[in-house]
Amino acid sequence: MEAKSISGEDRISELPVQIIYQILYQTEITPKKAAQTCVLSKRWYNFWISRPNLVLNRERKSWENFVNFVDQSLRPHVEKHLCLEQFSIKCEYHHKKLASAIDRWIDLVVKLNVKVLELHPWNSDTYYYSLPDAIYAARELKTLTLERCKFEFDISTTKIITFCNLKILDLRSAHILEDQLQRLLARCPFIRTLQLVNCQGINKLHVFGLVHLENLVVVLGVLDSLKSLIVQAPNLRYFGCGGMAQLSKGSEDNLVPCNIAIVDAYNTFEALKLWDVITEKLFQDMFSKHSNIFELDLESCYELKNIEIVSEKLKKLTLSKSRNLEQVKIQAPNLTEFVSEGDKIPFDLPHFVQKSNYSKGLILAIFCEKTETIFIYEDPKEIVVPPFDKVRILFRPVKHLESFIHDLMTMYPKTMSILSITNSKLLQIIQKICAGKSGIRLLKHKVLPTLIGCPDDAKTKRSYWQRRLKEVSTYTIEKEMDALRYSWLKSTPLFDQVTTFMFKW
Image (spheres, one colour):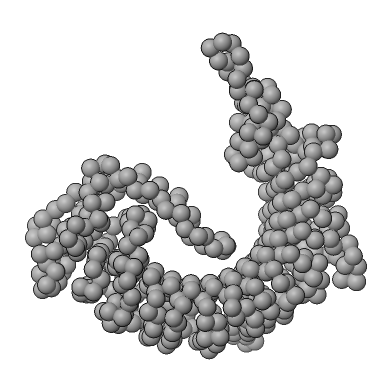
């Protein structure tokens, strides 16, 4: 039955075309739900089958049914000569007939001036989908994401590559020779984001001539053959690099880091993320040569033992899961956000806090993994470090307090002890949670390019903890706190300032 207004008019069908397309384009609708739109309005269903974005997943369909499904989805666009904004397919690839079908679809969407093309023909590690020549004629293409695909073009025939509008190139577990990659990049003059993840066939990578390149992410596994990475990109802003190792001869346990050099972008380079096998020399050379870095993230860097982080510009620092890190000397007076996670604290925390700049207001939290307890210091200068191992330290500006509380709650603490100040805004927020009136809004932050393998979206995590939280209450320290925490707090001058909350999940 079609939806009608009181006067009998079909007001849903009368919505402007632009609004209908906007709703359908920004909403992921399954084929089953899409068929149900005709219940609301037949006109809506017609718009849906000719929508500008086609995101198609094989799921449990047989390959024959999936081919028919994609063909039917493309037919209205071909018959009406409609431009296609996005074409994305995810399917298991192990059948030659399916390969020929993908070839045909690529040829069609290129003729439809597709702007976003995503191919995910997932399969075992032994098979690649060989890309047809038709893909290189996609002049209107702006984003290209390829997974488990193999480049077959001859480097002597680069005239077939016309990616003159491409801005984002994302290759995942792809097979491409270094000469092919160099020629491909040479035909992408306006590329802004380049991501290479677990790509095979590259021994040496020299990124140059890309004056618009702002974001570069390179991730390779231990069996990959990359030995050298040189980056010459004068406007590079973000560089993420991890898993950069090869197996040395005669020893599968001895990992040899890849040589990495960024020889440009001295004025624009703002954010650096390194993980896995990164040597101290590599890190110190890279960091010292780029004095404008304001965000640094070191994760699981097992080769790091003693490092120095000296910077007037650094504002955000993350040190996590680097189990061999013994000593970190931090001289960053303008640091406003800091996260440290590991079995031990590799720096003098009270000294670090005392040297911090409090002109904009800072707040400190320590999460003790063993006891599942969070200690929050609204005045970090009053810090007394709790006697626990495996801690996570978080240092944030007071102006991001609501967002900070959300991040702490995603750790699902059992207790939270707050060493508050007069007229504490923090206590007010927690008390609202206790009353079931959180009123906490999610703050929008500038988001750097997403890396493969990064944690789940923060916004999703925040909404999830709110659904899991059953009860919040205050409690008497003497009766309900364990002996170790109680004796420690009792011995500090902060005992009378503590307000403690208990959470039940």
